[in-house]
Image (cartoon, rainbow, N blue to C red; front, top):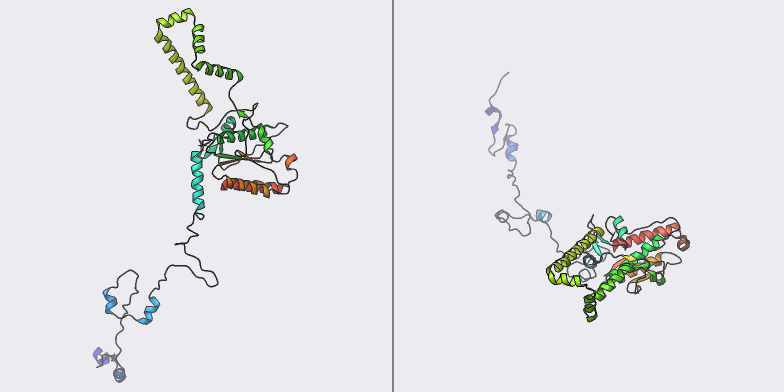
Length: 366
C-alpha cells in the first residue's frame, strides 16, 4: 500500500477552482460566478427616518412591493353589498343628546336618590331604601325599609285582610313624602287593579291620643302671650309660692332648667329607641288606621291602573308609560289583593307569571 502527497493529487486551477488533472480543463472553461450578497433592504416604518443603510443600497422594486406595509386612511369602512358605516367622528346621530341618554338617566336617578327625603341607605348593604309605611315592617326587613328596585310579596292565610291595610300604609307614606315640598313633587304612586275610590280610605298621620291632643292644645293656648293668660297664671299661684319665689328666684329658674334638660334626655332616648335618625326626619311616619288622610290623594299623587280584561299586556304598557312620564320622581307600585280569585279568576297561571316577570324587569331597569 503506497501513499502519495496531497500536492500530487489536488492541483490548483489557474481560474481559482480546484480539482483533479483530468477535470482541470472543464473547470477552467466554466465562467466565474460572483459571490452571493445578502440584501440589505429594510421595510419602511411610518414616522421613522430611514437610516444610512437604506440610502447606500438601492431598493429592489420586486421585494419592496411585497414587504412595504400599505397604510390606509381611517374613515368609513366599506363592505361590498352593504351601506357604508358612518364614522363616529362628527356624526350628529351618535353625538346627539338622545344617544347619550343612558348616562344622563343614570345621573338623574342618582341625583333623585340622593335628594329624596324618603330615601336612606341600608344599614346592611348601604343600598338606597324607602319606608313601607310601617315601622315594624321596616325593622322586620332588616334594611329598615324596602330596597329601591325590589318587590315585596305578602302572603296571608285565613279570612283576615291585613295585607290591604299594609298596602294602604305604603300608599299613605308615599303621599306624605310627596307633600313635604309642594313646589317640588318627588313621589308618584301606581295603584293596580282598583280605582280612585279605594284611595279615599288611606290612613292619616298619627297625631297622638285624644288626651295628648287636648294637653297639646292647652299648652299651645297657654304659651300665647295675652292679658288673660297672665292674669290666670297670677291667680293660680298661692301665697306660699309667691313668697318662695320672691325669696329664691334663682332656685325656681334652676328647677325649670333641670326639668327642661330631663325632658330633652327623655325625648332623645325615645328617638334612639325607635331608630329614627335625625339625619332623615321625613323617612317614615306613624299612621292612625282609624283616621283618614286629608286631603285625599289626587292625580298628582297617584294614578290608578285597571286590569285589562283580555291580558296583562295593556296593564304593563300603562305602567311603563306612567314611569316614563314621571321619570324624575320615585315610583311606588301597589297591587292589592294579588291573585285573589274574585279578581284574578279569569287569568291563567302562564299569563300571571309573564306579568310578574315583566313587572320585575321594569323594576330592575328603572
